[in-house]
Image (cartoon, rainbow, N blue to C red):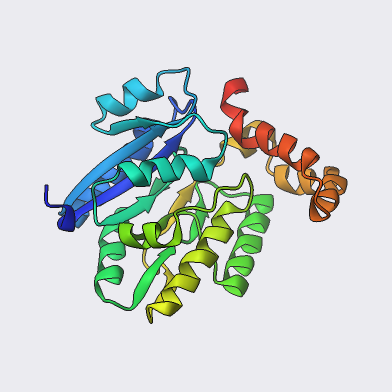
Length: 248
């Protein structure tokens, strides 16, 4: 493969045996539409299930990272990537078929430094529509689109990769890439024709009002975090993300 024509998709995964095959399948469909060379890298993070074996059986490269920080896991995948273009997607999510084609077209136009993707849930209910609208408003106001991240590898290297923090690393990374883009005369943007298909597995397990309940229940912890005490928020993040698949 010619690295200049290669696109690398990074998938961080912690005990994702139920979801890794369908994520890879969505990338394969997008790769077929794209028509160029695509490598898929699954970064196994503290996996104790069959995630690695399933990933390999579906044609992905596997690398390992044992940290408890999603940004560090993504960065391990970026370091291992051989491609000119980097795309990241979480393992329980999927991409639409035109995603890789649109990303390549936008980057090759020379107008954009990178960007994110609109987020759409895989199913909807009234509370999930509320979540959706809240996310759309926040993204529109800030311009810090996340979901799927995409940029050239040299851009990720120039900004030092993903900001290695346990929470809000996505917005911090988007800010970093946008700031760098301004120095290059390029804009940070969002896909217009494609989107991220966002998993509802936590809502399926805990109810569709999950995040609204958590915001009210943990308001004190969020307030303390604003003043520097992140103990409560760190515990919540571990339960919801870093240790979630150990219990479900």
